[in-house]
Every structure is written in structure tokens, then in C-alpha cells.
Length: 112
Length: 111
Image 1 (spheres, each protein chain N blue to C red):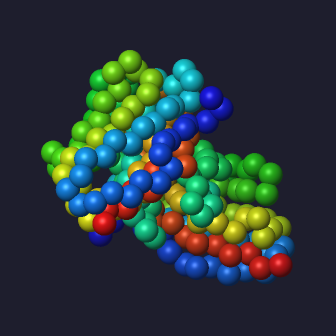
Image 2 (cartoon, one colour; image 1 turned 45 degrees about the vertical axis):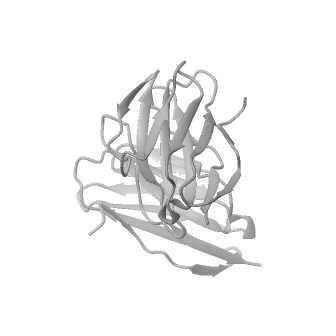
Image 3 (cartoon, helix red, strand yellow; image 1 turned 90 degrees about the vertical axis):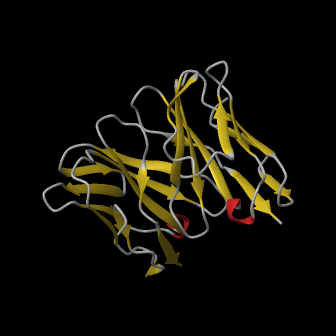
């Protein structure tokens, strides 16, 4: 596709539930990034993939958060036992090598 | 203290004004600097990407980097109502992986 695609655009779920957020990067981009943006704040780094492997997961807040990119293209961010504090916009970005990152429109996650 | 500081605004200017947006940073390892524009309920959109100290111009936008002062700026000439958005500065080290963002400045350009 022309840009980074994220689905769903909005997700509302109850505390304690499991959620999966999907990111489809720009075709050919080898690097993929996940960020989290709270209201009124800048995005904060979560995890970075180069190809299929997680090259840097230092931003994941705890072990409830996990992400995969099994074929080096689409990525899924998985959150277990969701908490109200997980409510935020989850942004995905992709890039070609060390070129600037291009972002999707994010998934707005609300935990009730 | 955050690694990247940015005045949250809001900054309100009349149409046609010159806008100056700024960020300061503390980590001297940052070598690549970006400005993103973010409209409400949209993702950040890359506006400018610079590496060296000095100025880079693209249409109505000029990015300025002063590494000695750890200070970057974005100037918008002849501002338009369509420029109303949140502007995010971002920076990274030569490894070029994770971006570190400022908190964003909300700009409102009034017709």
C-alpha cells in the first residue's frame, strides 16, 4: 500500500482482556517500529524490528506487552491482561534502512 | 528531566505570520533531527529531516539545528489555517533506530 496501515483504528475493551493490534508497513521497508502516545504527549518508543527479529525491545513497559513480525512484513503488538493505564494511541512506523520513519494513523486503545 | 523539551503551547498566530517552534535536548549523541506534523486523530507526518548544524529550507518551512547549543527550530513562513496542528520534534543517534520525541507544540493559525 501507499502508507503504513494500522488496524483496528479504534479498540475498546474491558480491563483484563487480551488485545492484538496490527501494523502493515510500507512495502519494502525492512525496519518497523511501535510507539505509544498518551494524550498531550509525544510518542514513546516501544520496540523495533529489523526484518523478523526484535532488534530493540527496551521500550516495552512490562512482560504483558509482546510483539511479533514472523515474515518480516506485518507486525502484531499483543497486550495481555490489559489495564486502564494501557489506554493510549499505539503508533506503528516503518523505514528503509536508516531513512526517516513514516507513521500510520495509529490504533486508539481504550480500556474500560 | 526529559531528554527532549518542547513548549506545549498552544501557540496562536494570525494567518500570514512567521511561526517559530523550538526544541532543546540534553543528549549530545543525537545527530539526526526531524520535525513531524500531527493533525488531530492522525499519525505524525514527516516535514523536515536534517543532520548537520545549519539551515535546511523546503518551501515555507525552514529547519535550523545548533548542535553546540543543543537547540533546534522550525520556522513556518506565511502561515496558513491548514498549518494548525501539533508539531513534534524528534531525534535519534547515528544508529538511527528509536526516535526520541518532544511533547509537541500545538499551533493554531487564525484566518
